[in-house]
Image (cartoon, rainbow, N blue to C red; front, top):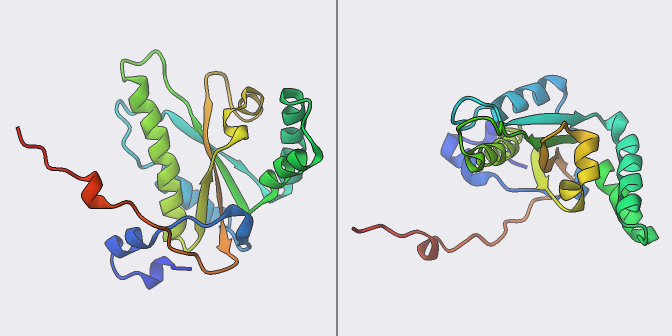
Length: 194
């Protein structure tokens, strides 16, 4: 694990960030003060119109069993033919990693700011949450999947008009993180010439 103290420049800190698998995270996770600082950093993202079109829902470790039970109930209601392994996976999802922050997209539909820009700001908040966790010496994993797109889960966790941008799990990696293949920048970056 790379911590902020091990990085000599902000550029090296950013270049060293990578996701860890939530299922492989162990304690410690951030304490209350660290999590508050991580969330405060996550809120410092581009936000046209100063709308704060996102919010953060934290789920304490002692609430994870209840969350898993609620997710299973919603899953069965939406997929009555779900088998035992599917239900167990839904429960396990809620219980992994020491810390869970759910990023909600909360657009202001009455604003003149385009919805797309507001949704991008929510995505930026989720990414900044991962980066801030890394800067505090933790690893993060931004996950989506069934629960992110379930109307029942959105109603459980959010308010009217909100959507789940993702579940961000934060903790300490149980094993060294592997570097994944990165995109070929020569194939992705081009100079515009008019």
